[in-house]
Image (cartoon, rainbow, N blue to C red; front, side):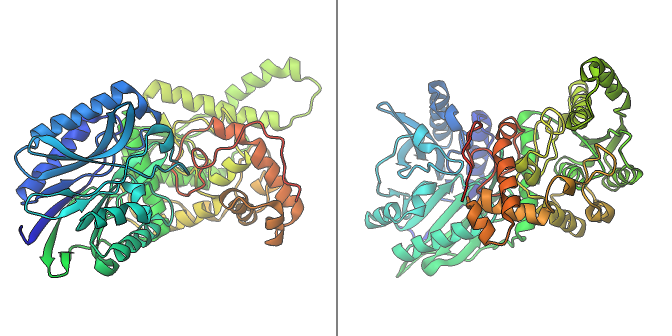
Length: 553
């Protein structure tokens, strides 16, 4: 047996359902590994299909096609290194999440996922059958490797059984989506597996956006004692060759490159850019438009879009009414000038007058109220969707998590759109992110550097400008208070009593709780948006639309 083993790690971006395209990515990675003298090339969990497939993977035609693609890939990669690739496997009436080991033109081994996650965004108990815990597979003239699939590495059992059965290196293929602080949890858990089993561990993750989820890569290699040997970048596609050498104490990974990560604001921003970029690219859209109000939310969404797609592919539309201030007009113009986006103005005055005239006989004698405000918002939605249809541009919606939580948005109005990058970002974080983007720039940002969001927008009091002198604070508590309560009720699942004990007024907490529950129907119909936390509105937090329970504690 050789005392040297080279492993090629392919941290790549699959497209869900593009089986041929994903196989081509795998083949290219394998060829790069072969050229580099690798004995094995590894790709992440469910790479052939993309991840997460949700119920699509249970469709017989789909999983049969995926299995056939892996068999064909194995045949094409016969003359060279072993190939490890994730994909479904169906046998004896059971569907598994499997890691396929290909060598010599065929699949020579499969590792089946044992622990199926059934929490947060995962429903794998619904989709797959649990596989038995297995021993390792051998690499010719190399080590024996155990591949616990993703969730399996978070528990002691599977890694321990593989090592007891002879595994000398643990290689973990992952489809692990991002949320704030996730990387620290990953590496902490993997260090535990290394310390428990006294063998090196390779954590291989995919990258890219899929619906609301960002897969952030960040693959790494740990030696005994949990010492970091290799750290691949966050969010970037990368092919890395890792050299292992046999010593008297077992295999040891050679020191390699160690990527430096930004802080959580930088990671959140990158996640929003990448999910929007991939949502567009993987669905076939090339350009976006959005309503630019002169406020902070539409300004940050315009900036995210320009960074993701390039300013030339972003069109901002100001839709003024008689309540739109000159300051808002000036601020909106400043944003598009700084970003270099396309810009149009379409007044809602005429359409609004027509709707008011049509409804006048029915509304005669009734005072103006929220109805008239919502008509303005819905006229803007109608005009933006008309442009989306005419020009083939996807409309972005711009509501932050604070607004989405309490329903401070008009369904079929400013909620219209195909994607919302800031859906899981509270208003207070929006302010922080705007300041961060003004001060930071990176090669993956396609918009210009510098102050792209005027300080005047960041500093002014937020307003929907649907009536004279309107401020958000007329209807909602200040955003630091609102967000503090929402972070407890939504992210912490706290009780009303818990919020009161934390110093918030009970009447305010009850009002926010009420708004949170009665707005569920709006969220149910809202556009998807980037998941930044473990309590994003969609798969993470599944509440009934009809719900008369309230916390009276």
